[in-house]
Image (tube, rainbow, N blue to C red; front, side, top):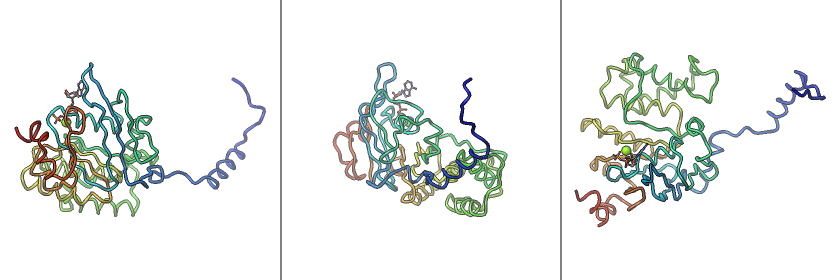
Length: 281
Ligand SMILES: Nc1ncnc2c1ncn2[C@@H]1O[C@H](COP(=O)(O)OP(=O)(O)OP(=O)(O)O)[C@@H](O)[C@H]1O
Ligand SMILES: [Mg+2]
């Protein structure tokens, strides 16, 4: 071990930290995610192969800040793989993926990407069944890795307000004291969305949110996702065309790992290529 000839005393270390705190404005998440040019996500030429098979084939796709984008396409088109790339679960063979102008997603780990505000909702809800709805939301906040120490931390008054607002937003205010395990399938899905919201994500990825839901639950989910857009950018993958039509602004059709068509629901539904490979079936 080499010993530095400049002895760092406890005091000088303390002062140095203080000077740094004073001089350098610590970057916040929202200052790191640069959306000045209007887009929150830039995927370019993303290619992912599994044993030579290209699940994504030079996929290029941009998501605007605050938009609600629906992604549709046949089974195996690469929709879930695209989400895996965005969240750092799968690394592409080549291509680029930027979150805002400056953050290179391909250089960030899964936890880093999550803590920078990309939240993903998986199909199978992962709520804590023996805890109440309220406690689930509380735990989701407490598990926020940006705050340390995390576990069993008491929420601040402001965080409790956010929690209450999220409870209203997901339509579970009346179920606040209900154990999550006794909720309906749809309610569990909303709770999970609420848990993601506790981390205040900038970009939400939702894969097949209405699978297995009743018609009423599907409609409530549509309203919820529409409400989330604007403040959050939301990317929804779904096969239920009635649902997609009810929320769609801009729709992207994926096929064999690339964009087949993009536009309004009417545009893509009348697109001959889309009818052939997907909607015509
Ligand atoms: N880990 C993996 N190993 C091997 N092949 C994979 C892997 N993940 C996905 N694939 C293949 O990549 C292709 C794209 O799969 P992906 O799950 O992204 O499709 P999808 O559009 O989400 O389909 P679905 O609508 O059925 O959910 C499929 O052919 C799939 O079998
Ligand atoms: Mg999928």
